Amino acid sequence: MNSTMLVTGGTGTLGRLVVSRLRDRGHAARVAGRHAPPPEQHIEFIKCDLDTGEGVEAALSGVRTVVHCAGAQKGDGDKARRLVAVASREVADQLVELALGEPAGLVPDFAGPACYPMGGLIRSYLAAAGQRRLLVPLHMPGSAAKAIREGANLSEDRSVGRRTWEEFLTEHVSRAVRR
Image 1 (cartoon, rainbow, N blue to C red):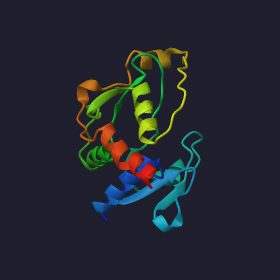
Image 2: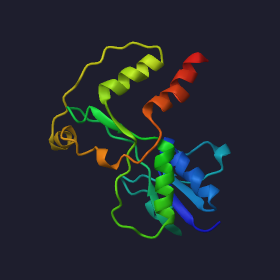
Image 3: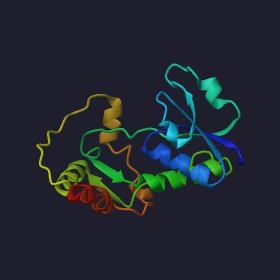
């Protein structure tokens, strides 16, 4: 193994992919989090709480790089009701390339191939799953929500991902419904 990489959020959807890719490339991946992964995954885990700082020093011991994998945030409003859907495996590939490369400072955003209205994403998911639900829009107050409504969370000009939302629905949701 080349070096130890610390992956925060390493038990989540994106984090698991990052850990797997780092290991495939010969790097030890340590996971820090509040909840341990199942023992059969053979992952070095350190209980750590980034909010309180508990366990952070132990998690960072001997680490060359930290890869932070956090959950997505949701917003509302005209532009916040649009999301640039991006495949988690493509994001994982990009994070691993950055982690293994030279320090790069601020790097360009990474986004999926298309921007979708939030309502459209939900409706297409429900249709693929064979479900119907009433959608009720909610207004989120505050300056952060205002920035999201104005599109601060979108990177439409950086649509470099390849896998579409429709491909995801066909592969995961439609297949699960057929079972």
